[in-house]
Image (cartoon, rainbow, N blue to C red; front, side, top):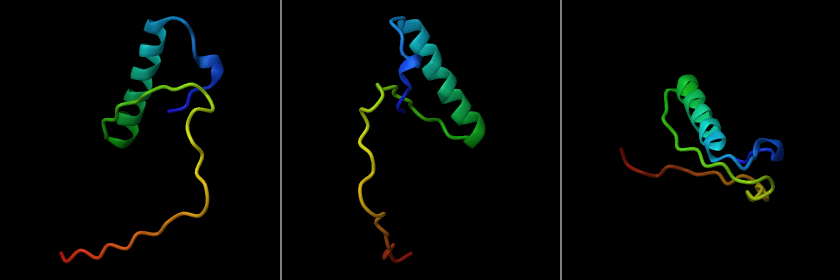
Length: 60
């Protein structure tokens, strides 16, 4: 998850608390457990181009 610059601080305890809060929120909303990794702003690549459609050709 890309965090805004005002979210980052030098306090590790504060960042861990924010990470846990986000994980708990996602779990409460979706029922899924996720592992959140906080990264600095503008470090995640943006999607480029059109979406790719996937066709499931498995025999079920």
